[in-house]
Length: 168
Image 1 (cartoon, rainbow, N blue to C red):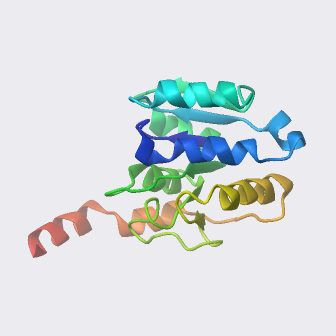
Image 2 (cartoon, helix red, strand yellow):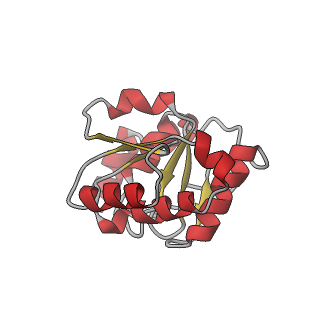
């Protein structure tokens, strides 16, 4: 699992940390979530991870210009954002065939995800639902076998962008 965002309160990483704290101990012993990004909330997030004894689960990796080459090393993007304007990380994950787990309100702002088809959706701040999703994915009770790259290639072309710009 990975998450990639500017580390500020509205990105909901604190919700992810709390959701992981609710997981069964057996899952917490093995779960690894790489956190890519930096920002003003990083210290509080790291403190929360330490306080909840989840250091084994979270690895804060900071910002990187090579994120586009890193996505393919992961199966799922967890993006618990409360609000977004475009949501690049979800688009980037889909382009890399990484399944997004994100919020209906923020992470799916472009309405390109269909729950259970090309990603998993939950209500922002619904920590219990996020925890349940992670558990179901971890135990193999739910999964998605989809080529999400084609969706992005077809929907977000430069020709469509230019046409839509001129239409505006």
